[in-house]
Picture 1 (tube, rainbow, N blue to C red):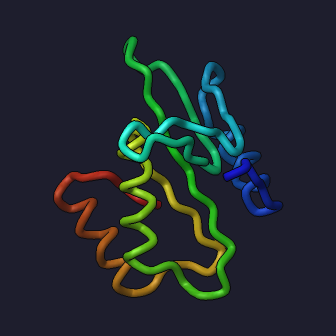
Picture 2 (picture 1 turned 90 degrees about the vertical axis):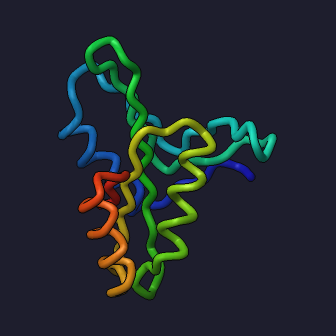
Picture 3 (picture 1 turned 45 degrees about the vertical axis):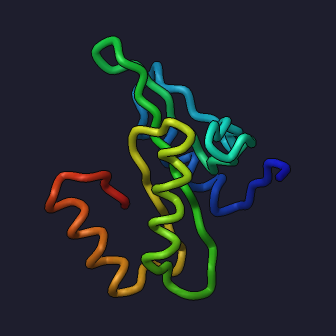
Length: 117
């Protein structure tokens, strides 16, 4: 699948560039290898930084769907990121999240798993 971008993704990148540490690398439409699927996978925005000598990768997915994002999409992003070695997943949805997705996200935070914003 070819890398692609949209205006919403560009806006999220600009915001994250301002929030990221000076030495962080931000890559739009980053292609990372999925060793399970044996293919390249696109990450809308990849933030890479060194924290206490450890490389940290944060994957940001940006959606512009007309309806709120559901649990299935959140799980799909999380699984894709796991397969390419991303440490933290952030999902930004222009239309927000469904009630079940918000509850899923709250449960993920409560038990200390990956946080999805």
